Figure 1: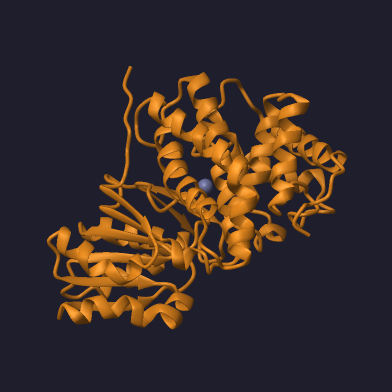
Figure 2: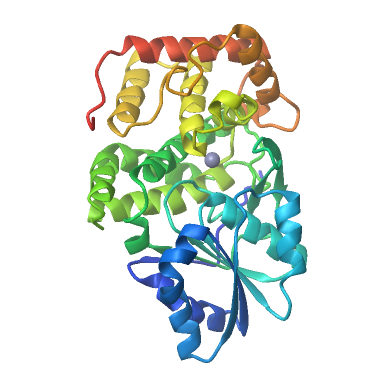
Length: 368
Ligand SMILES: [Zn+2]
């Protein structure tokens, strides 16, 4: 049996690391960095980033990300790269995916710097492309993972709490999807079967969320870097990143991709929609009441949506939900990695059941 474990060359996590990016370029033998950066980070951390390069007399250029990781945006950066010999992406998941895609097209090395622990994208050899209107376009598989991933916990502690919670929703899916791929013996994103390492990291990821998730969320609300936050940053970014890529995706992310076609959900973050995907997958698997209750209560504690109402779909009719379910079951998606046949009608029924179970679990959110 073929198993493949994919990971970044190095994963660096700690406070203040954003000022040391020049050292990463040096390690990789590069001289001039092209930095794709979120507008907010550019406005607030420009000096922290540039100081290291300027002190070393090294060249760099910063280009602010447009907000959508689309073919058009990737092309724009590829055209303005000039003499730069390495791409650094600093910001949220879409910025990082754009940096990875541009580096791949230009055959350059990449340093990836997530400024929130909001998804498991940073470590992966994958970019998710969207259309300019925000709807899902396609997965762009890359030949290698980022050369270095740098998580500056001091910056991540300043990010909105909702981003961290969303990252936990994304990370929560990792174990359930890897478990499905293990059962179905499906091929993972890394190209082999689910390995022992991947499923173990995925399980550690889920257990860490359940143990430290709430404390980490409260830490971010106080803008404090605590041991719980550090553990959740590692879970959301590294454990989930390796876990999903080498463990495989299944129903939860397929449902997420289906939901991106519904305008009412466009304001929801990736991990928030994935959370509902996890609950839908549990409904498809006919999970026990205990498992449902554990997950729904955890999600409520950290403010993740568990009902159609909370996703903005209070009045959605079956026809529209079925259109999302059909997309979730399309050939290009990962629904087929589930260990049994699933039709769009099954997905629709599972979404309705997940919503209904969540509504029936009456305990309120602990953080509100
Ligand atoms: Zn995800």
